Amino acid sequence: MTNKIPHNNLLLMTDVYKAYGEKVVLDNIDLSVAAGELCTVVGPSGCGKSTLLRLILGQERATRGEIYVDGNPVGYPDPQRGIVYQKYSLFPHLSVLENVMLGKNFTTGLPDRILHRKRIQEEAVYYLEKVDLAEHYQKYPHELSGGMQQRVAIAQALIMKPRIILMDEPFGALDPGTRERMQVFVLQLWEEFDMTVFFVTHDLEEAVYLGTRILVLSQYYSDGRDEETCSRGAKIVADYPLARRAESTMVKATSEFGDLIQTIRREGFDPDYRQHVTDFDLKHPDAFQTLTEEEMRPNHVAANTDRHSKTE
Image 1 (cartoon, helix red, strand yellow):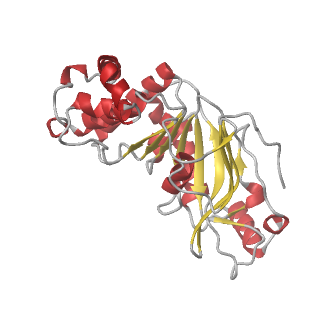
Image 2 (image 1 turned 90 degrees about the horizontal axis):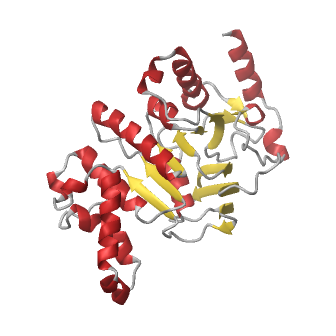
């Protein structure tokens, strides 16, 4: 089964599998993402969220399937794809300014680096201003708070002007107040720079608040494949479009916000709620599936799940 595939988007993944030996982690991932989306990615622990980011980054290769960025095979990591980790990617012996300049220095030949040092430095200061840290440029990472260190890491990514920024639970180590301020900060940067972002988080409230699109990755589903012989990995079991404008944090208190979180928790995190692959909640207009005939077959697990859910 193949729905109409949106080929002209920035990122396209078709029929992508990732396995480590006999263990399948990602199972037939189909995804098309337009430039300017802020995609949040959620799912149970171990479902392959970080693996998905590494495939997009080019840090790992798909076991099967195709991945394209701007119509070209994904290839190895390059400056077109930046990444921000939960553990700050800062060198402790370098100042804040030197840390932000690092990417430019690594990708510029020595003669040009010397010739254009002032321009690179001015560019680094510009991005430090954007993350409200220009006055701290001479400090070292240990002199900054956790939120400030993460802003330096974001400036590191922004200075390379990537087409896609990948964020792997970047606020996971921050306290709740700092975390919420960083959420607002990321939305402001996303709007200002018209960025395309993939944001992995285990926090459903954060995911629904930040995203223009939320991808629910889960190993909890059913299909027509044999339960005993098939090694299943996670699929995208739900794909929701969300509001395209940064909202006040007050939106988190609305009933609609809370209802969506509960729906996502049921569809992606409840091992007893296993939708059949043909029933996934793929509401985003760019969502599509490349299912095999075997996957589409009904089975007793799906039937029992349907009956159970209808009686609740």
